[in-house]
Image 1 (tube, rainbow, N blue to C red):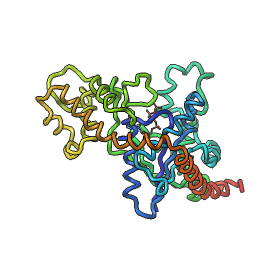
Image 2: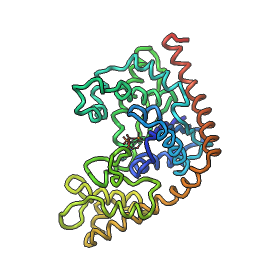
Image 3: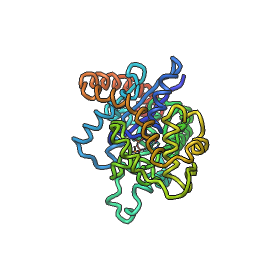
Image 4: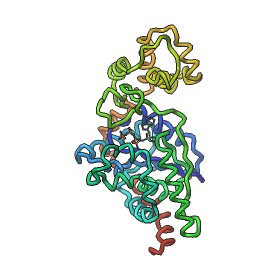
Length: 338
Ligand code: AQP
């Protein structure tokens, strides 16, 4: 049977990129899963602290992110939804895998290179946790024996690392203890920043207008899309290379509008040609608002309900602890720790 695992960092309210690139697919997988498929979704708070966080802010984000996972349609009875730090087996496996992981391989990770660019001569500032992040990510996946991991395009390289570490570990041990998971890349492309369409939409970017949060009001969505960066070329064409801002808006229409989802982006651009950009932006804003509205409304009710959130988190912790223990015992046994 399939075991599906994925995670999201509780580093802010999830944005449209997180939703279209990952969370929407989590819900679809849940709703279409065979009865014997296990679904495990984690709020990876230990990953969140690889960057300095304010403790009160992090506490708030953990709760809000949990509420958001329920608001998008995850069902805590069907799926295991939990805070990573509640299940110590993730860290235990991480240590065991760290003893196999190659530092050369980790140093070549794009995310490490990007996040540390400019700091190379200042090793006191380069943190071990950020460097070994992919090992913890591998542990998250492998400790549950995940067979399938749905992620956005930007995570493909880390997933390849998890596969390699699983295969490497099995080779050293001489038998298949760990499952090398398959990557399920989300059908949606990367959603780009509304302010700098060469960068992905991100929770941590300093300009809040660069992203649409799943809690944004209709007015906020309209305003952000109205101000989204496009270009001054004539006409409406779908050309992500030369016209990344406009193409990002066409992508958003494709992923959020019922009719536009049935045709490809080049055809959408043809249908829109002749319309003023202002009208196109209004169409995009309307489609995004109708995709987000039900989520926002459910979220508002859930985030107030501490009892429900605490119960769901406790239930998730219990189920995840049980799932992780099964693999951890086999691994400890394989390396001589039991
Ligand atoms: N812009 C994006 N387009 C499509 N998918 C995206 N994901 C993130 N940004 C986009 C996918 O969301 C899932 C959870 O991401 P994460 O919480 O691990 O954070 P991240 O990938 O580091 O991106 P964020 O949200 O922008 O956070 P910060 O700013 O803190 O780095 C992943 O499956 C990811 O692929």
